Length: 231
Image 1 (tube, rainbow, N blue to C red):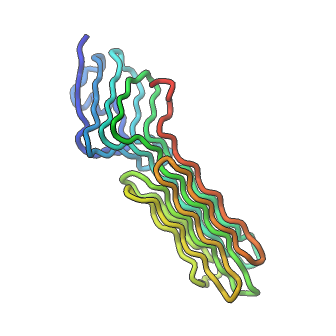
Image 2 (image 1 turned 90 degrees about the horizontal axis):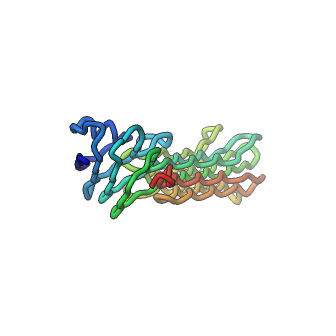
Image 3 (image 1 turned 90 degrees about the vertical axis):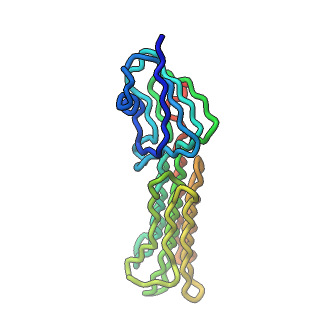
C-alpha cells in the first residue's frame, strides 16, 4: 500500500491533521505518516479545543511521530474577591485543555512532550474590617502553549487596595504565580493559588481571616490525550 509522509516543521495552533495533510497533497487514502519535528510547538488557543486533532477518514491508517511539543491551553486563574457585606469567597480556577484528541486508530511514537494545559489557580478569599474591604489575590494562569492563559484579578468591589495583587498570566515557559494577599492592621485576605504546570492541577486560593472567607479551588489539568483507546 502507498504511504504519504510529511513533517510539521512550523508552529501550529488548533491543528486538524487530516486538513493539514490534504493541504500538502495527501490523497485521503494512503497511509499517513506524520512527524512533528524537534522544536515545533503544536498548541491550542482555547481550552475547548485540542492542540492536535486526529479525526475523520484515514483508510490507510495513521502513524504519528512526535519529536516536538504538543500542549493544551492553560486554564484561566480565578478572581480573588472582596465585597462589602457580601460573599467574598475566591472564585475557582478554570480547567486546562487537551493536547491530543484521537477519534480513529492511531500509531503513536512519542519522543517529545504531549501534555494537557495546566489548571488555573483559585482566587483568594477577601476580608473586611468595618468599611475596609480587602480583596483576595488573583489566581495564576496555568502553563500553556503559544497562547497565554488569563490571570485572575484581585477584584475589590469598593475600589480599595491594601496590597492585594492580580495573578500572573500562564505562558509557554512557566505557570502564572498567584497574586499576593492584602493586609489592613491584623485583617488579611488570602493569596491566590499558582497555576498548574503542564499536566498539573492549579493551586487553591487561601481564605481571608476575618470575618472568614474561602479560597477558590484550583482548576483541573487538561488531559494529555482524549481517546487513549485509539492509540
